Image (cartoon, rainbow, N blue to C red; front, side, top):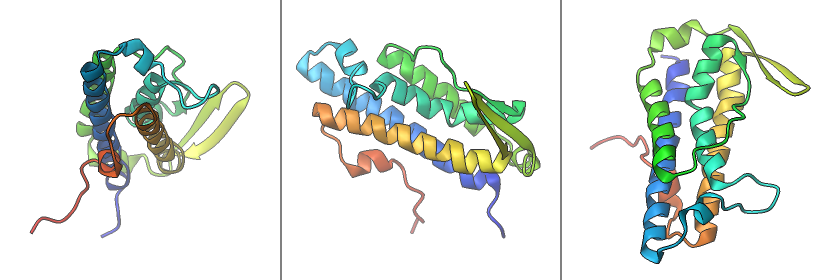
Length: 174
């Protein structure tokens, strides 16, 4: 049986949403142990021209659930609103994304295959099919932003490792 669009996108998106939630928990716990300023952690960057931890977490939600909304509309544009500014607000953003993805109907997603859509930002206009947008644009983006959040937390000293990034893998039982 061929792989469905749902199977190619949704489980990986849910895995990275889980990772992002786990990173929030670990980072907040680390911060609580040290009685550090939450805003300093949430605004941390790896380098000056890279966006902060909050933006990286927000972007995991935007490139998972936000990508689904964009396909439904036929147009993807970046959400330029500021990212949530607290651990709890970031958790809410991720929880909303997770709920949307868990509620997706496989038949609906399959009906999108071959559908035209586009990405627009400033002077950039990219035409995609729905499946190419999800698999070649949104998916690499949610992995990138999740790994950037991981790198920021790790750089700060949060005790995390590869399995904290991997999250819940889909291994066979037995």
